[in-house]
Length: 452
Image (cartoon, rainbow, N blue to C red):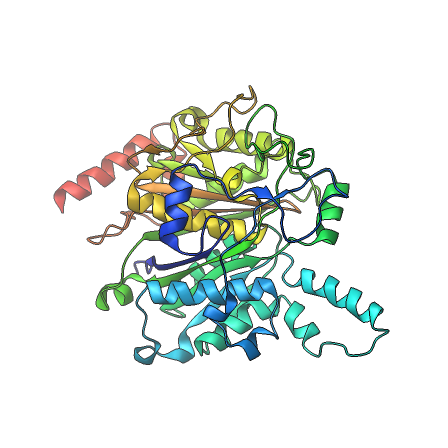
């Protein structure tokens, strides 16, 4: 039986580059940055002061004030971006079976910001006048639960929390639900709000933030650059509507991209550092290619994790080379972190939405601040300026703390037929691994297409 196809039909984004997809794409594709000195708290005690803040978002545009007060900032972002995505997909839930619509959301630290504020407030007030919503607003569960409440849908509602790759995990699980026939419709995404002085202090103590001398150095972060020296924290959220292809086609939904597969591995090495060889990241790429039934030479673009740290950028480069061999040098790669900072799980949402829009516009957004190439990072990173390109198939790399490596396969939607799947996966892999396997399988696929 042919596997059910999974299509992205709606996008919603709340980001440092704007709170609608048109603004987000306009700024992202033109190489504009949302990184600036942090305005929401005093950074004078720190050697780092830059952040990527969301500046033009009002939760009351989406959430009644009374309900808004029971939520944390990350949940505000989640609900707002989910409602945007539903509107963009032109979904009318009165025409859908609400009991089967699922929610899959990712977050790394959820309401930690509110938990820290609550702790400080309780101590100041000597445990009197405590906010009764403090617990529910800080739970990771709130990110998916409040989206379900806002949309009044009653299918699976789950939050995934595996660090920075949480959103990729949420989309992968949503893909599984639809591909397996458990539902036709999933709202999936991720949200994060880590800009808090205590979180900032801990990240700086761990030497993960790029020092900027009080904001006088502005070209941070610098993914894949020889002078890269750390990340810049960001915040925000993004959601997508995922639908089974025939369900989307029947209702005339917009189709941004197809999610064709995913892979997931774990370094099992360190909570803070990647495995230097990039072997497990490379294996995740290989799993994804097998899941999507793609050959390495069919990949047209890689949206990289590209954090701007010395070890992760080198490891990711090694992983791409490990997975693609000599093909790695012909594939354009770019990181969005230079424009958006690192928003933990929300970065995965920005990557997926940015890649879906790149497929729609046939344009690769640039890697900012890459002016001094590192000999260890010698791939085509689309430095400084974006470029038009023919993009049919793209990978999204999402690598998180604890060595959680997830890769998603997104493609331009072919409304006539799915990517040819001539054989079962095990047989396909067996042929591909033979010396002439790749050429043979390509020939078979081409012949079948011509026969059709």
